[in-house]
Length: 342
Picture 1 (cartoon, rainbow, N blue to C red):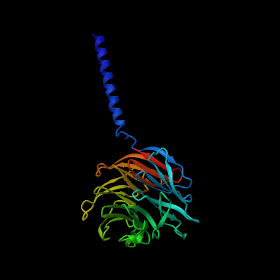
Picture 2 (picture 1 turned 90 degrees about the vertical axis):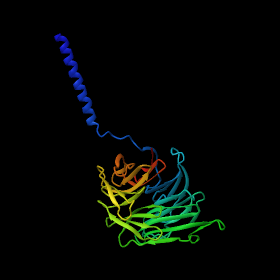
Picture 3 (picture 1 turned 135 degrees about the vertical axis):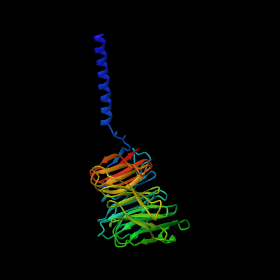
Picture 4 (picture 1 turned 30 degrees about the vertical axis):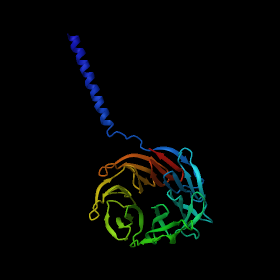
């Protein structure tokens, strides 16, 4: 009987210790590390320094500094096919790029600003034909909003504020020209504040400014619908439904703008280690933030009022990021172009 009591006591002790270990393990693992969302599928080592990327459908455009502008077909991401190459003349170099998959066009922004020349050309990807150049002065960021036969290039510009140039296609002459468009230039003054990143949704454009403000404009009229401040120093914005996602330098900030008369900050997320958040793009239910000192941070925004940091992609000298169709594509000045898929 004593033996049985001892056995039961020993078994009870083992069970209690085991339960304690299980509970302890659960505590140590909370919160559980999330699964990797995006996995590296391809690294394109560009002949020049990769400064900018843009992707639309299966087209990938790369501004590779002195090596010029490249466009790849990435239908098979494992074997990108070069479709286009443009090398800027003289001492110019490709610094930013945008691709228009609807019309098969690519826009190059060239530097340095002090250099004269053909700095903002537009080319047909398939033939390499230059259709014209854009009336930029000192652009900060570009974004395309294109339709069949219409190329709209929006940009923030240190001189012109927020503006866009257009090229339109005329079937009778088989030519692209700016004067074929009803409105081929629209300018919204920068109100003496330096403009940073911007995002467009329908008839609204949100612009981050250097005076710690974000302002929303009606595209048609140029009038300011509203302006507001965030808890950080807004560098860039992206739309997610009725929410604005803000790369707020040291924070990731979510703003509800469903009511334009009273936008409200609903969440400020601090990501450990992130202190230079300069760009934000969206892909599905994810926001991808570029920190030019650390790499990329992936945030789940499926519940905008409760965003979750789910992945960090460390990169030594990340210079730009784009995202679409289950892919995140980054340019890095050391590594070239990196294509991730989920």
